[in-house]
Length: 372
Image (tube, rainbow, N blue to C red; front, side, top):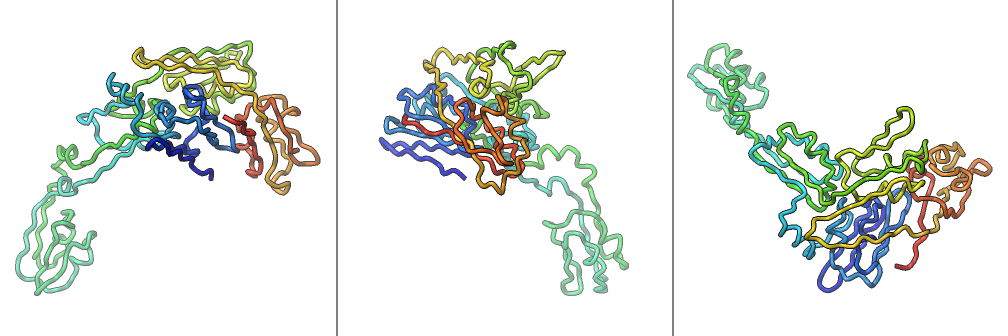
């Protein structure tokens, strides 16, 4: 597990969490001080933050995946002024079903709820004299709501679900329970109480929550607009890097019969696909609302990459890593004497697919850090 990076300066705190980073590099492109660089470290990323960092928070405002957090940024205030919200929730339509929470790939939504059983289970109780203390009612009660006290049954109405089992089995007809639950259909609307908690910094604006909400209670906005451009002549036919690495599941392929790369409405223009495309076949043009002025720098530095195995005992030379590598197999990953050879590979795009698919989890991939 990679450790979090925390920068404290000017009474402000900036925190980088590698668990959430997808390596899209937006933070690198918008940092006004060029103070941050994101490096591959196995199947995760780490941030190198230099002393030039002013802890302004712009990187956190435009991190769509909750990897960088900061409070009190100027840009967040601007977004609030122009009324931008990533997700709008109509509480009048929300039924607290929790599908949005289960479907969110970033864990940005939590649904807290409680069910008031009293509003679902209703009925009436009557207890007469004549109990013979046979305890049959106690034995059949599914919620343990009955006790015998002073030769008379007592029913805890907080536990009673009005199932009528005790009244049906009582040999002396001491208990009478009448269930009205089947006639309380309208109460289902009011029986569930709770609220939806939304973590705006972790939301990637993919729109999956909006897609799966059965009542259309969620509306997802896009901070960026723009165009996704795909150049067929540069695309490697058997490569699947853009689709496999897209954090928002926004890329699909069609083969009719030639390969076509298509972007769906989940795209948030983060540029992960552009950054890792080995053929440079994708170009993402992004635009912000006119009220927000930011320059995006081109950052495709040539970095050394180190490929190695943790231990030769973990590598069987199966070759799965080479079969998944979208580039020339011999130049990037080389198997010698039944094991992956440790080597520096300048042409490696650091997509990390080899690390992810290694059946023994024995492959390591590092980008070698430079000064930022």
